[in-house]
Length: 115
Image (tube, rainbow, N blue to C red):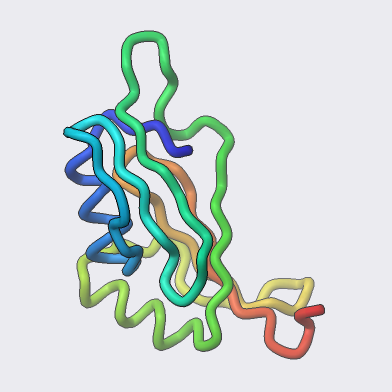
């Protein structure tokens, strides 16, 4: 579950920019989305009083087949990459962006190093 203080912006980001499919929505306070090409889901929940949203030490990782193409498509949809694709010391290509609440998202391609 991802708590957000900006539900409309978060829904737009995960659905329209990252390509998640909206599968359930309960008013303005809860949305569940399916990851493109899999059955993995995430939930967006409005953060009420006393609930921390964003920059809480959470980083999501999404593996893609072609990192360069994925990053280009994300930028065309309005995503701002904090780190452009680069080869990391452990051998994976990696890029980074943030959702509307500031939660970090890593997009990577492990290539032949994927077990």
